[in-house]
Length: 513
Image (cartoon, rainbow, N blue to C red; front, side):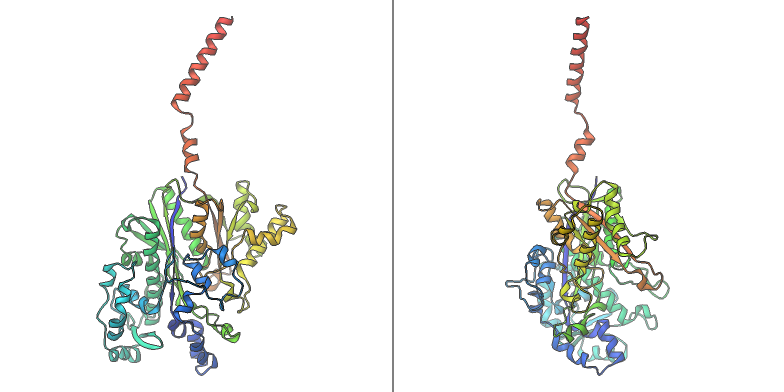
């Protein structure tokens, strides 16, 4: 039987200070043009925590708003406030920066994270009150260091500063004197990814209604790579995050594939469970500090706040078939192979139609497509357009070309089979997976029958190949009952009746002779 999606989580961490101090657009500008007007303007365009919480796409991401409801909100959204918006949602939460720094320290196993003692005294209690944070995590928080000690590390030991409200409140020290792969910059980047993954794992276990000890394997599919000078991408984020989250029965490994990695990882997890190798596998990913404020220059130029001010994280729990939950159908996998090419029609064909053709389905037989779900509030001012809409137009055009959709129905297709984007531009985060939680519920409740999750990746960014990448899978309603009935065949009673009837017919034929 197919494996099922038992639960999913989606978390955001509001990190405005990291926009200025750790986002690549800003740190690069500090090197190239340290006195630029842009850098002077950044602090004036950072949103407060309350503004980030009341932002419609953020409320959608954590599950308080359904994508269909978001579609009905007048665009653009950055100047609209969601009334009664809450920190906590059905899938996760929007954690404030000051509390997140404590989770980062709890994820530090080599004492490279230092927090200032006054900061600890003021905010530790708020962190400890979070219902998802267990006591064993809180116990990892130290009393804190003197500010003078932290300043010494930052000024003279190449430590990466930790800031809150633009004030130094801590630091991440380098983990090695000369290894650039263990520099404070890389350690900071990796710890932020790990900590946001831990937060997502905690919510995923809760949402799936399972015990932490039920998880046997974890797959991390974020964009960072941890290692040292001898194996710079050795890993293993998955097992490292599982340790902090208390998944004591889990092993794990990392999957990397740029933006397509989450869909690759979900397929691999589904295959591992269906094969019987593991009963429960969790796919997880934390956020990427480098992409904070990535399109900040365009946003400020157009008078917008910097909307890329949150780290994103997610986790999906995949388990043995429970007879109820939405299934991942491994017979309906799309893939962009080496020989596919990069023409848009070829890409969509490989990801969408080839798998459907194998089982005699049409494009219009898929109720919802979830490709790159980037928030257009972020991408349109930056000149990248509405990314999800562009994908739906290509899929719809292919359906018209195949004779599966009337040309006049193309506009309706993008609305009825598509989704408005709401995910932060964290690279791997938008790649189809933000819809898995909603799709699971919509399928279970009969609002839709199926959905295709599509991930795409720009492999050429690593300068190892010019190839593009992509992969897809279809999730649909549970078929365990039908499969059981088919496997069972004819019941014993029915066999006895058939034999009895055959004997009667045979006797009747003898009498007739």
